[in-house]
Image (cartoon, rainbow, N blue to C red; front, side):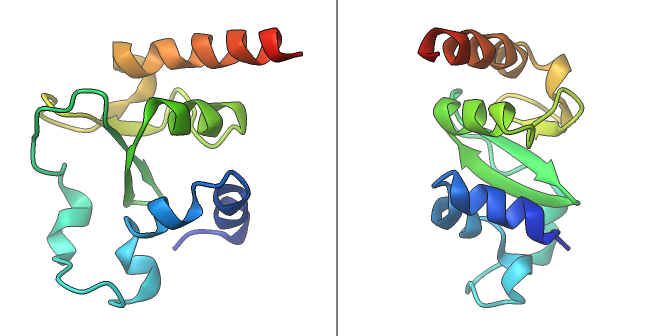
Length: 116
């Protein structure tokens, strides 16, 4: 189950509602038509390569946009060891092993420096 700090940080980032819709187990079946096996498998592949899913405490979170991922990185909620999946991948992999996600760690830090 998710710890309270993670949920509070997600809500503080303004990602809360969108991400919460993707965490059905957290609400014990409040979201209809959820198949329990979906949480352990990557979602169906689609054509949007900019969409990324991440795994936290064994739960799938997403789809997440590039901007949402950068916010999670800056708040240390997405690390290089976090498992991620995006269309075209056959399995979940650490963020550092996925070039399109790994580059966001550098971009997020650069953008943060430029804003200061």
